[in-house]
Length: 77
Image 1 (cartoon, rainbow, N blue to C red):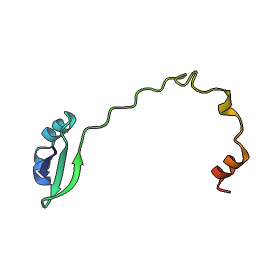
Image 2 (image 1 turned 120 degrees about the vertical axis):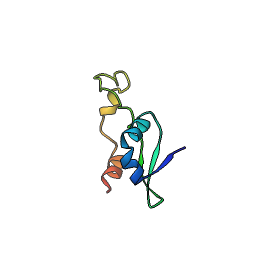
Image 3 (image 1 turned 180 degrees about the vertical axis):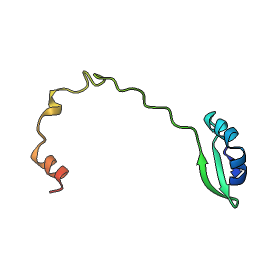
């Protein structure tokens, strides 16, 4: 469940709220009692790209020209 914090209190306790968000707590910032924004942790990165991840998954048919009717549907004609 999200922790609702008034903007004034959030300014006063920003470092503490930032640590809580980093730990996984969702914090809703409220202005005049109405939800205004969310403070949430960043999603983990997708990881480094590595060449060859699709090796064996793409065969020669991938590079063949599309049939005319399918090509026209992609071109909007």
